Length: 146
Image (cartoon, rainbow, N blue to C red):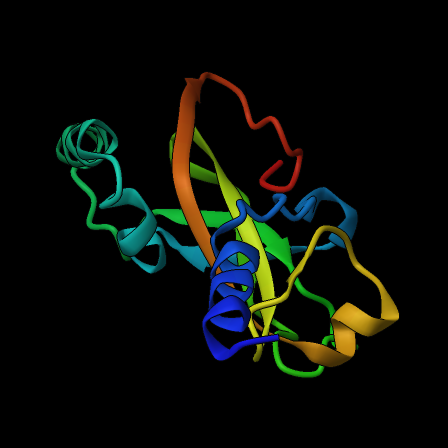
């Protein structure tokens, strides 16, 4: 195979959309502050505006709003302890924010994993969150804060 053909095949492989990782299969919640979600929230200007308005209404800073997210358990060699979408954040007794996102979990060569496995736990080195979606509720949907 020529070098050009190899490069073309590599580009086709790399540009294919990776399937999203199902974070619900991680099975653990972990706490974090809303400020830890700044990068994800910043990917959706409307979400950023809604969060800023909710912070002003609650008279809180992003560091004062507590959230939970799915947690990579300890067996994940490089990702153990990191939090990942979906997230739930508590602004006030009757104001909760739920944020979901497309999550890609990848190894150092860019290979994407779609679910937890022994191979993923050993080889995954990074996760990327994108395309946030969200909704506001009046009750804690996770039961974690009750």
